[in-house]
Amino acid sequence: MNTGSWRTVDIVVAAVIAVAFGVVFWAWNLVWAATGPLFGALPASQYLLYGIWLIPAVLGGLIIRKPGAALFTELVAAVVSALLGSQWGLDTLISGVIQGGAAEIVFALFRYRSWTAAVAVLAAAATALGAWIHDMPLYYPEAGIGAWAVFLVFMVLGAVAVAGYGSWLLMRALAQAGALGAFPSGQTHRA
Image 1 (cartoon, one colour):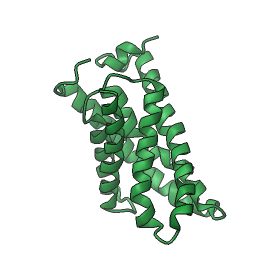
Image 2 (cartoon, one colour):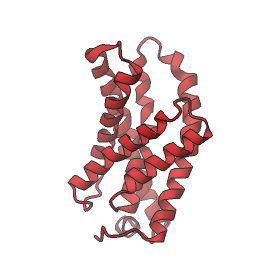
Image 3 (cartoon, one colour):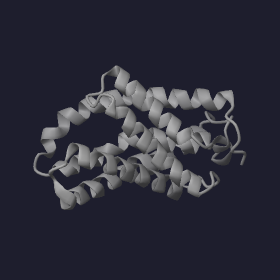
Image 4 (cartoon, helix red, strand yellow):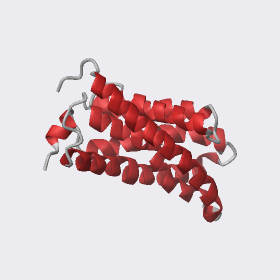
């Protein structure tokens, strides 16, 4: 697998994924705010919904299969979300860098050569861990490490199911539909 320079199609598809998910992020921000009271008894359980914000990092990496794809798609999605009015402002960009960077680490550990569901799940778990390291001291400084551990469990579960396995299934479905013919992901997962 050539992990060399990016082609124009790589940049365009990564940008399309990122912009589409930036809009999804904006809508998901509203869902997050609206559903908060439903999780009042156990606020950490709302983090089962967190995985939506981690999809571009995993999906971008799975489709583009080049160094930087996970970081690029997650960061650009965060930029779009911030420009549309994310309630977290510029911190959204920091989150995008951390989450995309965490997925990059996993893809790099596999030398950008393994694109299995297991690798997607590991990348998603890493994005959740990165988000947790960022979010807990910033948004829940008074909670303490015990409560933070509960948040981590919910974040990882949501990330693995939605951003990990969900992204892998979405990539396979796109490949089987013929939408990824210009990518190794499209050639590997044809029906």
